[in-house]
Image 1 (cartoon, helix red, strand yellow):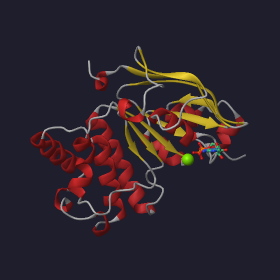
Image 2: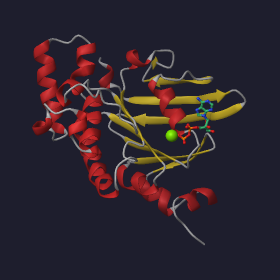
Image 3: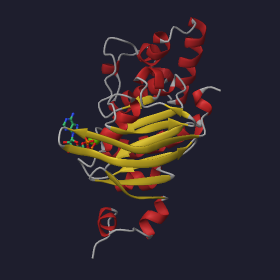
Length: 243
Ligand code: ADP
Ligand code: MG
């Protein structure tokens, strides 16, 4: 079974300290394949820390991460093989769009014909066929972000991790890319964990929202449930209730 066919990702007591600061205080969460989960919370609540722990870029202080029956929190980022899209998408400036997208496959030393085919599919998926030979500096911010997404998904990762991927784009483009990200997720059939501090973004994109506060999960639910039945005053306030 390839890891793409996993049934669920499980975080058990996921914890991370920075010196005396407990940035993540025992997060428990289960994510099913196919789900789009938003990690939502104010700046500094531990969203990026959680994502970096999931990606394998930051070791846990306590707890564990499971893909079905396999414990993965001791594996490095390459062995986990998750797709990552960050706020600063850091494309290689001297490589064409096509070369940027194929980078991960070349690192995996896949056969040339397979690389060409998969890159072509990814280009199509993010609608960048016409920009394939351009350099990142020659395309728009939204197009650059699409390259970053294509580069993350071309290796067919079981899990795609996105950390505020749209925050550097203008408002109009943000809305467009929101729809685009959800469309791509639906086509891939992977699981996506999407970090944002934007309630609107989480409500419109996610199947489930995890509200994080001060390194802890405050509430988990569908957008409808969270909006209609916030369980804590701070969640209600954060979701936009005023009284
Ligand atoms: P968010 O992404 O939700 O804004 P972060 O996960 O970046 O929050 O940060 C959570 C907390 O951990 C913050 O208090 C932040 O200052 C702290 N923190 C994050 N990374 C480090 C680090 N490398 N060293 C020390 N403190 C850190
Ligand atoms: Mg962050």
